[in-house]
Image (cartoon, rainbow, N blue to C red):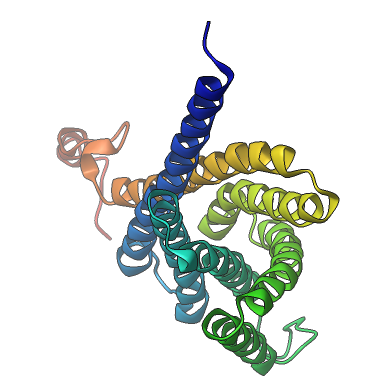
Length: 266
């Protein structure tokens, strides 16, 4: 029979490999989504609100950094890697929330905009969190963790709220399709964040680790499905301009109609 020490060592290696896989899935899923999002904004959208898509792109890029920092933290003993991964999670959910919020306001006239706060508040929020976190990261990592916790809770609720509003307002458009596919990833991040915060204070380390593993892999999977949805949106637009995909129409039939005399050019 396997000794207790050997079983413990085997379990530790399994958890480490699972964490490595989870980080890698998030990094790869974010990178694929970022690529297809850039292609979609550049080549598919007729008109794009650059600010909205840029904020969303920055959030997804933070997801790439989160995954890479997590891989470094798992494979090395660098103390800063774990703190950097925490910060990347904050910036992922914060910028995704801001991007979805701006997508929700897309299409409103200036006189009809339901904004409760002026646009400069967005800059103040971003500057405050970014500056506070970098100060904590460089000076006091305990302060950085506090900034991350506060930002996690606020940005997660913000992202969920505006995701629901954006889907309702833009129902039937590509914006609604993108947000609807991204919403499960936001929900999974929110669940992991709240479990981490609550579990950390309640002393439920094992339960939090298990939920983190499952939730993080789900986040990566949902990022992949969002990338697939964006690629499908682009494919549908491409098919509109591809005559080989039209059904019931052909050049031969049009030529026959013209020769039969049923077509007149007035």
